[in-house]
View 1 (cartoon, rainbow, N blue to C red):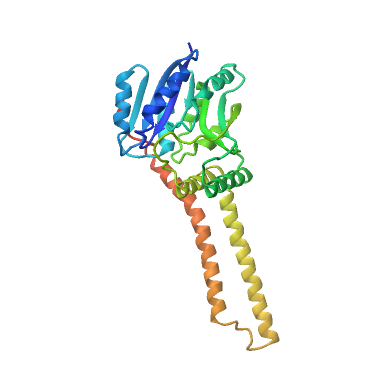
View 2 (view 1 turned 45 degrees about the vertical axis):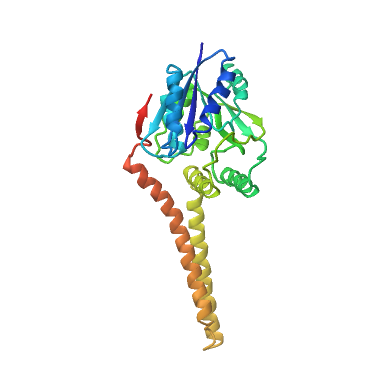
Length: 309
């Protein structure tokens, strides 16, 4: 039978793991596949590793785990899980059951037909999510799809089933700063999206605050678009042009009305603050890209494994 690998990144999910495994097993046991699980403990501070050890002890041939030396982030956990898999097909799932396992048979049926290389899930609503967070998420997709050549489907989740060929393509990208939603689309391959309604997590609380999501969105934009650098260039050019016009106006006014060209110290301070703010903003954009280059040139590993079973 074909082999299906299930990758499950975990961070402080000791409450969700005992609920996740039987829920998924109930579904995959009815599918014509051999299954292996790869849980990735991303430096959890709770009893996540203890729960994974318990699961591995119950099913050592089926359940495996990778435990990091510290928290490296979800992207590192996802990459480590993909590297560990051996299946013909690989599916990525969240352990909180916000990725409904009942869609796995439909995903497998579509991808095993050979017509698609990837079958992903797309949320058609954000029920139960804070309105402000939903608004920011929608705007992120609008922005990145306008300024990037790599298009990302609004509502698309990391929850997707991929062929071995596509997984190998994703793993071939060794970049340190990773944004998987963009990478999945950048590598190409034919993808089908299945719509579903938002599902609340079964236990625990999410670690994704609005601020963390915002930083993640900024990483996604800078990873897959050079538009911010172009924006910085245009801002600098426009500011310089306005400054030149201002100088000409001051000179002309001084010629027409000698001694009346001074606008006062308050206006001068405001102009200086404006120009200084524009410069710092542009430097910040450039610095973001330079920082990514700096981290990449260090050639540090994406993650460090402390325990693997």
